[in-house]
Image 1: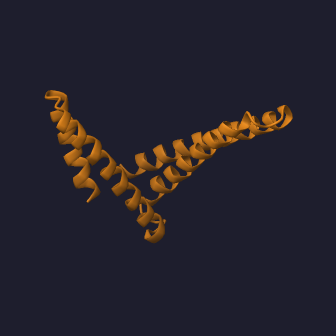
Image 2 (image 1 turned 45 degrees about the horizontal axis):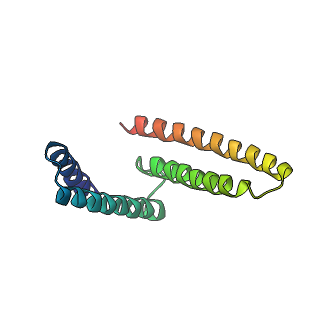
Length: 117
């Protein structure tokens, strides 16, 4: 299902570039949301029922870690201005460490994808 949506989306995006119609733009936006939803369901299913021995598992697992770390970093940065200066410094340090971890996880995702390919 996911792969089919991705193929259809790529076709529609190419058509939209060649012939930009508002109705097609709306369809692309809708299909992009459907594709993202299908990918989210795929990831959840793979993490819930997939095997860590599967080559598809680790890119999804590390990808999920990266997404979670990025969301947390944004939330922490968003509330940092409400904290006293000393707490802001500590939070900034923790956010930097979290972002460094996320970058290492991104590299792990790339390495695991390369190993599968």
